[in-house]
Length: 199
Ligand code: SAH
Image 1 (tube, rainbow, N blue to C red):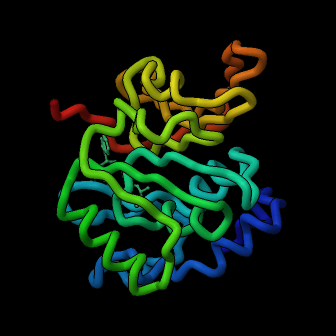
Image 2: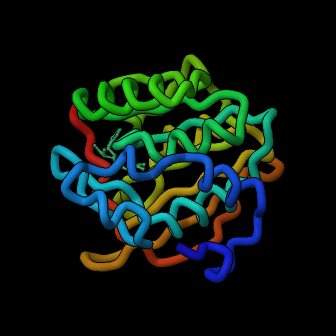
């Protein structure tokens, strides 16, 4: 895999990705493809994101060790692990309990201890822990990013979120809160599973 050749220059991000054993997050039947630059299926009809997309989203968040990050869509826990290598604490929410439990076991095995998990609808955010410096959404929302999440983004904060623009098109969007206003920028076309609310 050559993230560098694909234009990822943030060395802290590249190092964090190198230090997370992606093969541990990929099901046994896809082991030989664990490091291919492609999304792969995990349990319960979900996917582990493509390495280049993980790298691009992580770099766009402009992270450092002082940051407190909210992640929506724990899935395999792969993106969570990459984030945890870069910041003070990661709060992550997943709707599918068995996925959350598997991710928790894996992070424990990898001795990643700065992650707090919650089972529930991440579209509602985590009000008790708000505001967040950074928010990353790894499931696609319809049209606009969830309003509750933008509300929980602190001043100067950055959020990345895939949004569905039409039946077949999704865009990874970077949003920044500057002087109380939200400034938005398109990053790259993506393909994520939908953000579902199970309330
Ligand atoms: N970051 C993950 C990608 C997981 S795919 C990884 O690296 O493996 C997206 C995940 O979002 C799925 O596990 C799905 O169950 C979860 N999801 C979908 N809607 C959600 C919601 N409203 N709240 C929390 N998680 C959600």
